[in-house]
Length: 338
Image (tube, rainbow, N blue to C red; front, side, top):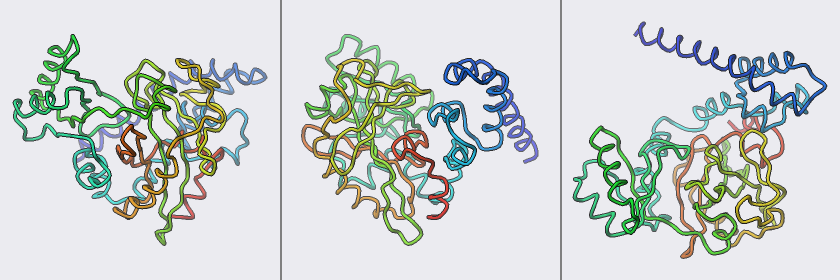
């Protein structure tokens, strides 16, 4: 036990030291946003908010801390605080349910119409049979998030055998996957951001009386080249005006990237109408009570050609895009609801 504690302490020390080294390089970027400040003062500021409040460089840039007062900064949910909220607003059992994509799909099967298969306890023949049946599938690590390790398998592709071999080798070495039928966006969303499945992220909170609060609604998109729409993997997100069902303002990417138009399709974001958004909200109002112990969730939905499809629930949802949508820090509001 003592050895484990020592390893954890060393890991934390190593993480902080690495952040210190990176912060000097990152301060050069920040100084371009606020040239009146010295680079050293920005460097110290980056370290202070990381060490004492848990705001990493992405938080610092996303929330434009150089334009915020101390009181405004303290109101934001940081990366570290977001992890605290995960423990506060969910039980270990429900967290495990949402983390395991196969268990999640089974629990919320009423809202999932796509074909899917987990590689756990499946023979290679069963896996290949499933892939051939659906012809175009996506393989995701069973217990990972953020779009990492995701790849597409298409039976008509020239690299089909090669990708299939990669999957087999990963399974042999102990990795487990969920393999799902590819979903295609409705034409309107596909034209906006081709190349990826573009999804609706709706962040919900159930307060202590189990009353529903919708914290944020966003459209998440790929950059036109990448397979995933993940904000932390080259994608972008734009706020949805829930009352008007339209996109509002520019889209945001990691570390202050902003887009008035999509970089691939060149379609303007502001005012873009989201089809069937009211249906998405109606579904969310149902599913939040399937697991009422999951009180702080980022739900991902796809507006597909054949209707609304539930993709996954994220505990906790990313603090960055959630507070992009709110336009202000939500830490104190979350404290009032816990």
